[in-house]
Image 1 (cartoon, rainbow, N blue to C red):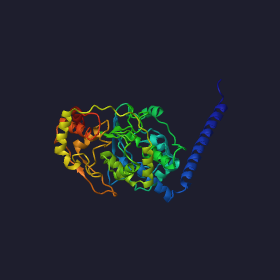
Image 2 (cartoon, rainbow, N blue to C red):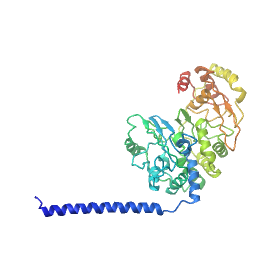
Image 3 (cartoon, rainbow, N blue to C red):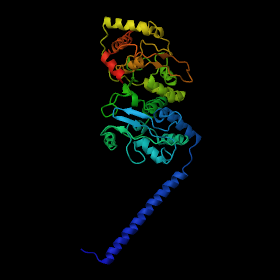
Image 4 (tube, helix red, strand yellow):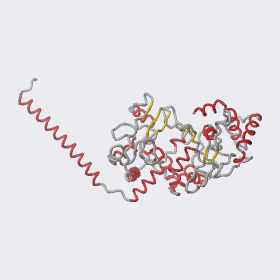
Length: 421
């Protein structure tokens, strides 16, 4: 039916009026949101202090600081199996940082992995862990970050391979692997255990390194804290595996390691040293102990691999190299100088199924991490230019299988591959 002129006019006016009312409603809603944001209570010193403690526990500085002179200003490249991602600016700069973000923007990023513009974050940002935090703790972190010096620093775009360079693929990833929601306490466990779990599974995101990943970069189900490759190293098991896990470590061993980067059983490697310096050494004694309590309660996961010991001739070749290059610091019996030169017998890191971290230390050398608690240091020279691939394989197999140790054998080809990396 053809409408008459008056009816058409009334329809147009009604549409204009509806549009005006809709715009007014949006404006009023926006004004109310802004007013709510403006009228919200200012964070208290306790809020900021708690936020700082949580930021330390999350090791945010390690990823979000490319230039030590510009802490938390982002720009640091994080290499993944899918390409490189650059950590964003967390300072309150309004153009390149968090200065223009609302509390809800920040909450949505940590709870759901959704950026301010509605795009999805990549899981290099561990929102799958941060989602377990309470809203109060998330906003405490924001309150602390707002006290930082604003630094203008634009974050480079990700350098990912197709199809991962399209953020829409994260919708599928989230559907498959991400379950948002806070971590509910286990009423059958102690308050300390629950605090440790909240830290380990939540803000400290220990599984991001210490849990193996599947083809899509998600945690392998059923293998939590079973150790994983990260940045060309191997993050060791944190479960109760007998040789390569924490079964032989006491609560005090774990706490000392987290606070100083070393204990009577081991020294922190390159990647963990950074975590110790920027994170765990700054945590309270109570939080470190809570983490230790939770980790010591983890059951052993996947069985350790069956080991075929080196032949007598292989052990003899490795022992000869050890006596010539390692004995001065690590002693004939491998006892070393605990907390300076780590002991080798029973060393869980040394007996990991994946020998990559051991190879990296032998090839590149190492230096003991220093903290205010333990400022003295020790160092180990690099042997990449001093030994052939076969010699490094021989000495590695020796120390991984002498003094009661047991670990899978390493080949010269594996050493060559590690050397190229």
